[in-house]
Image: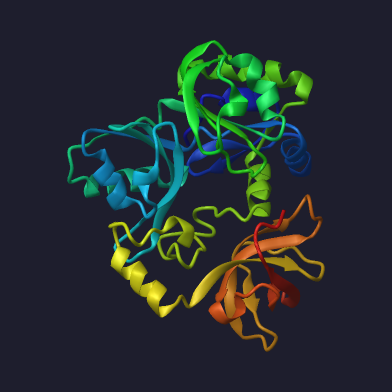
Length: 358
């Protein structure tokens, strides 16, 4: 199993460690709900160094990115990031990722940990242009400093005005005394904050400085379990749960990053699917009766006909009720529709709702 550069720090802090995407990662420290509210109301820090980082350089890098991604990368400016996804020949999602435009000839692609090898092989297979690809996933660390107090707590560590970095933009500069740190106004919690990228050798120094700077703001380390409840309250997809090689962006509600006026892999298949209409759709739902939905639970209608499957579910710390995402037959996808989640042989009433939950 792989470890991040922060592995010993997590263990020294008493984190509960679990295997995740081939890495030993902290799932929680003091408790999921506590860490959830730390991020929603203050500032928390996540080690997400298991994510992959690819660098694409060359005079024709724009052509490669336009071909592999469903979103329109030509609209991205230098210093801007973009949420995107890659599709296979059948229109299924290979991965969702964030692309960063460093210069006209250089981009960074941040991919999911479980897909690093698959994505790397796929991008190289598609690379018919003058583009040099470099996989720096094992050399780089990534901290997500998230929450409404992230800007104020981290400002003392850099001369860059953090409050002036717009959402989904980034700057490269000195942070915690280390040069060439990528400071990105991104994150998967929906509570604001930053993600910072740097070389592994600076991990311990940066961790200490981040925790010192955030001390007066109540900063705490947070684990993957809280990251999951935070992203789910915002209705964000998790690869492997809510999206995979068999689900298309249109079915997953990612039509907003599927620009059919650009030329990408499987564009014709998705254009046809849009024209004919999708048969299933990823929806959010709230439990109307007591019960916590979980991954792979069956969704049925009032006559007990199977109409879908739960892809993600939890007890929302903010709402104090069960929430989930799942694919349902298109006729059941409209907000306000009653559906039933099968929990321990019982059909528990739920309602399709508009996202986000919080």
